[in-house]
Image (cartoon, rainbow, N blue to C red; front, side, top):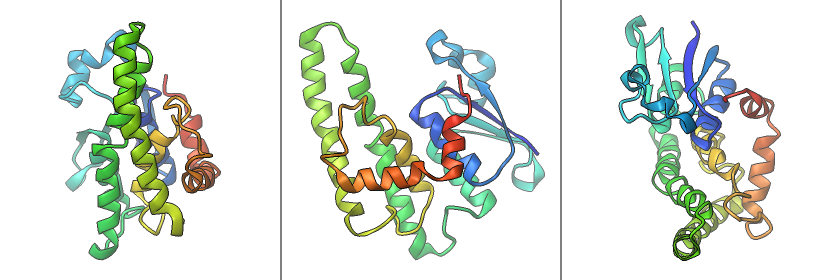
Amino acid sequence: MTIDFYAWDTPNGRKISVALEEMELPYKVHPIHIGKGEQNSPAFVRISPNAKIPAIVDPDGPQGQPVSIFESGAILLYLGEKTGKLLPRDLGERIPVLEWLMWQMGGFGPMPGQVHHFIALKDETERRYGLERFMKETRRLYAVLDRRLADREFVADTYSLADIAILGWAWRHERHKVSFDDFPNVGRWYDALMARPAVKRGFAVKLN
């Protein structure tokens, strides 16, 4: 059955489009124009109580009943459990996937997101303070990722939900004013993932 996918063309939206393609799940995109405030409509808030994209409705959820899920990390974990793909069953193998997924959700998303915000400000005083603070932390997080990838192909050894979650934000590295020349291991990882057919499809699907 087809999953209803509510999204916009953002890093968090692209995480889910890539995951759906990698897991070969049928889905229908419902664009939610966040610039026009469509995320605040009562119909969408019933699906996503936090009024944020992405969200999904799976008509074939647990026990065959429909289920709605919001928050990109929760959606990724649900899809991994549903399909048995990109989320190891073995607890020892699953731990690094969960660690790096939470790393992305807690840091490598919120911090670059603040860079996106402050870069757009016209007031130079506000802009300078915010960029200095959040760009420093964003670059620190890129350095953490670069060290992690120094001796491995993927963040959790095998390709997983964690890679997809992080990729959604690394996709915006130019907007973060980050060059992969400074983080070559991240650059190698990024290029390898972006060359995957399912990833290409996930980024090509129209979300707006």
